Image 1: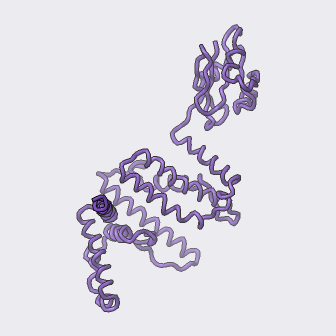
Image 2 (image 1 turned 135 degrees about the vertical axis):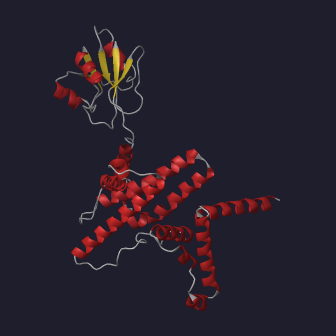
Image 3 (image 1 turned 30 degrees about the vertical axis):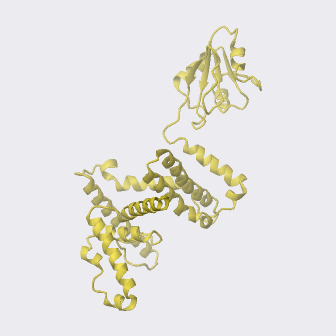
Length: 329
């Protein structure tokens, strides 16, 4: 009988199931292709094996080698993908991927591109910056279209930006570099810290209390960061609820984020009306009033429980469809 032992290239060699090790130790012969990553582990375990190097007939070579053996033979299938199973053979999964294991393939692919592709090799944080804007918007378009296959693909493009920037950062030699593992460690630590109701003994009554706890923890983090800055002798503005709001985002989403942050910090809601600024009217005229009207519309949308950016995008799509209908007519 021939057992085809399938292993994952994303699991360290030697980390096999007990059934796999039992099969290897009890086999009358272990067959393997040249350079199989499990071979050093077999050497360490004292398990003898025979190399089967048969280009052009790899699919049937294990079966032919096992034929005539009195007992069970084990074939170490090349890792990755579905193994080729000769007639009458039995497949044994010696190791399997954990969720997220395929991210290792992405990291390895990015490393190879960075070394061997002229375009990828010359990219910098600055040259990649436009894609940090473009790719999330393409993912949003796919989400709004309802095309789940397109959304999956676009999320991959978004993920690539994270991996690419981390790969560029890993090459820095000035003490400011970091790796993709550092990025992952940072967000895991933040999520654990800001979810004490999941990872500690804090109890919550619902989603609203989760949000309040999140904001309180963020405030504490900002205070601690300000204290470290002051202790280092660096002057800085007092912490604000609006710290970290990126002003490079579209104006509607910027206004909404500012209002959300301010509201959660207890800022009076009537400040969003931007009343009491006659100097702006005198200086900017109609333009200043239009800006205030737009800001008030954002507040109105939020009060109705709607996202202003999403609402305007929906209106833009409806307008696009009407224009196309007009053109066709």
